[in-house]
Each structure stands twice: as structure tokens, then as C-alpha cells.
Image 1 (cartoon, rainbow, N blue to C red):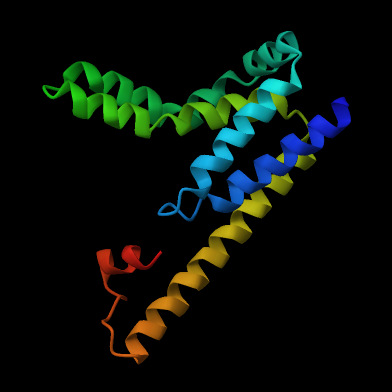
Image 2 (cartoon, rainbow, N blue to C red; image 1 turned 45 degrees about the vertical axis):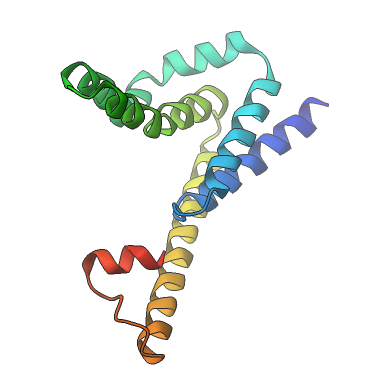
Length: 152
């Protein structure tokens, strides 16, 4: 049973990494929820805590965007907007906790990073092809700065 849960965890991690470059769609949010649920189901909380303590520096570096937004919350005059920013940056805390508390094998980390690189290339090619199609069909030129991000 534990091996099946481990495979489900790795598959959900791959889905999160693949959908990460596609921010406009809610697939990433849903896959992040699936990853978190499978991480909870893996159990062995003592081992997770030990792994996380051993990876303090990488965890702190990867989750720094969350911590900066949390610190910035004390400086904001619009508390609702500040909480919204903190909630939007919550994946910067969840993903490092899940990764650094569960994955200890270097091969899995390398595979995950290669899958992420592949998905970024695919997302970029998709956006370039879509912008090129719009240009050919005279639907607008989306190759400029902020307009290109609308394509993805």
C-alpha cells in the first residue's frame, strides 16, 4: 500500500511540475491540492520533519517569496490586499515543504527538474505558435512584451 501511495505522490508531483508554466489555467491549483493530499497520506511525520530539518537552507531559499510577502504584510495599509498577496504566494511555502520533507533521492529531484524544464520549453513553444497563428490571421501582434504573456 505504501508503494502505491509513493507512486501516486510522484505522479502528482510530476503533474504539479508540468502544469507550473501554465499559470492561467486552474490545473496547477488542482494538481497542487492533489500533491498536498498525497503528501499527507504518505505518513511518517517524524521522518518528514527530520528530512526538512536537514534541508533548512534550500527550504529557506525556495520559500523566501512567501516569507517576504509575510513580512510585507506588516508594512501594508490595505490589510485585505496584503492577505491576498500572502495567499497567492502560499505555493512558495507548500511546494518546498512537500519536496524537501519527502524526497531524499537525488535521481527523483533530477527527474523532477528535467520534467519542469521540458514543460517550460513546451509551454514556450505553445505560446510562440499561438502568437504566430494570431499574427498570420491578422488577429493582433502578441510578440510584444506584456501582450505575449496574454497568449499563455
